Image (cartoon, rainbow, N blue to C red; front, side, top):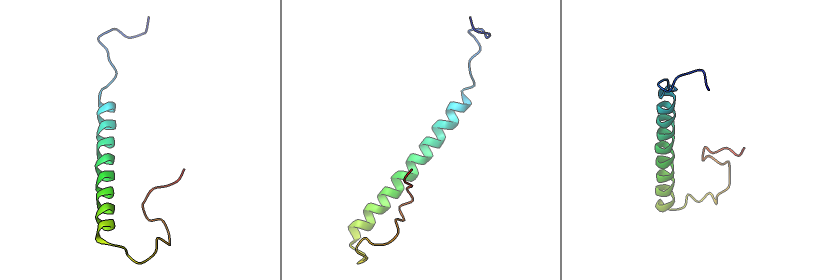
Length: 60
C-alpha cells in the first residue's frame, strides 16, 4: 500500500498548467502556419527559396 490515503490526490494545477502551455503553443503554431500560407498565396518573393531558414523551427 502507498503512503497516502485514497482521498489524497496529486495536485491538478500541474496538469492545468501543462494544458495551458500546450494550448498556447498550438495557437501560436496555427497562427504561424496561417501566416505562411497567406504569404505563399500572395505570390513568390523572387528569392528562389535561397537563404536562411526563418521558419523558427529547429532541427534537433
